[in-house]
Image (cartoon, rainbow, N blue to C red; front, side):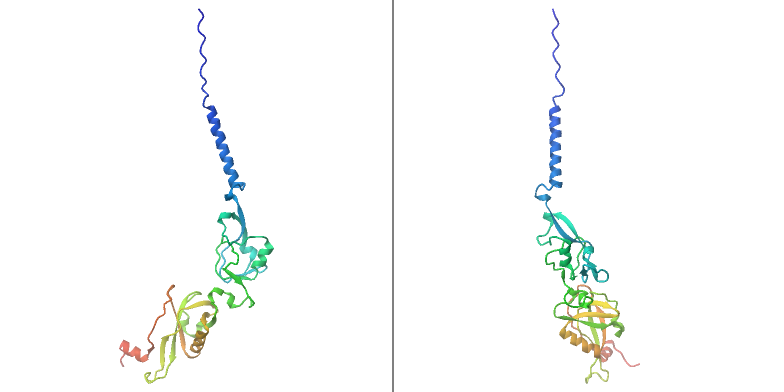
Length: 264
């Protein structure tokens, strides 16, 4: 009697098709992601060409196509072109078309509010304005935002009295103290009276021992008379303190009475 034929052994490779299918799906997914992120597929891949500040720009910087140094900066040095995702670009961003168009648009513009590196330039950007018809080196171009419409600049010489030399910096706020000669029956022969006058003035600029402050036309007249007739000093305010204060005029009689001075 013949021995029964051996049964064929079951194959151990039944999982191979599933493994191959997993590999194929992984490859398809990777290709799809790569396409969407690098080939512009989908809305998220669209980019726009914008103009961006290449460095920090302070107020008072004058943009020029051919000058640099001092208050001047060459347009091509301080702005450059970047390609950004469309959804990261503001609706009012200035659309770049050509270098010549950009130079023409920015030439003789003055920065009135600081730009930070990476800031996107906007159409009709409020951080700059036309230099205007005045001379390029005019003090009015130093910080146009610090000279409100209707105000004028008045020069105060720091050397006029020791109290004018308080180490104030541009942008500091100061009050002006004045000692004036006031003749009246109560002065008893000593006419000197000290009082706080114009308050909360912003120092627009300091140059060569001269402090420039922006004031109204009326206060400019007040300062003119004070400069010509009184001894002036400045007091420096704490940043953020813009309150108006009321002070009592002080003369020699007040000092004697208040502090109890008596003859020796």
